[in-house]
Image (cartoon, rainbow, N blue to C red; front, side, top):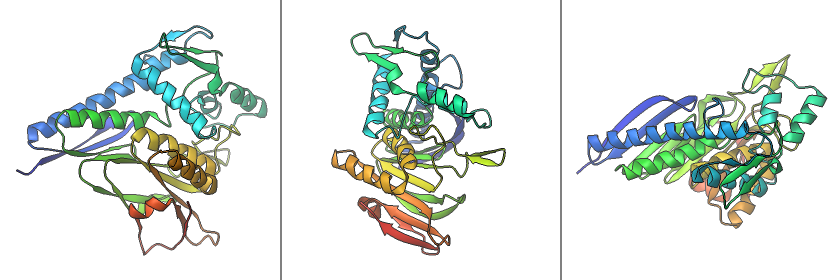
Length: 326
């Protein structure tokens, strides 16, 4: 008996959500899609810092030095997120909320002066949050410290939604949440966008039981007083990371792909590919694809991890130079 497939488009987590769900019956597909939507809404109600009534927002508003009890899910998730800060050498930092505010990334953009930037860097420090396993309490140690979910919340929502859809009877599915894609069950093919114009495709990416997250500034950057400001901040400098193009990470989980696409963009192609190799050597399942302007300025340079060759095919009509790196 063939499966029934339905497609839904709606808004979630401040962005567009698309779901394609297959199940043995139409009713089962509808139930599975609804389970996925409800799970994403639940994660938004857990993690959003765009509103002040979520557990993460309340943690960010807690009095300094006062232990805040959080749910086992949030406690475990934050511990995992803060471990990624160490694993990436600080290229990914969940405690960048003060820097996000200093640069006005949620309010149209602004350029902080040197004193303000130094103050924001001082409190954008993961060490200002401590975790007590026995009590499931998190303590923040400065009134200005804060956790930003922008580089990992969507990935976690995709993981949880896919699990809920499977539990509800889905045999395969594709979720697209603001451009990050997660596919389970049957293989799916998705476009790899040109970082200079994301409406254009430069190749195709094969996904199965994996998530693909792309980081770049082509859509979300803003211009302030004639200066282009990217939305991806380098925690080491406190300033927007240099804009070279884009990076796509394919990983076994949405959370891993989301975190690492941010970290690798901050690092750039050379250092990003080196970290990708080290992480694969430690057992992390991922592949990495960088697009950057060629030295001649006439096309895109493509660099990728070895396993990405099995997943990615470049459009031959594009002017590009290809270099493979570990």
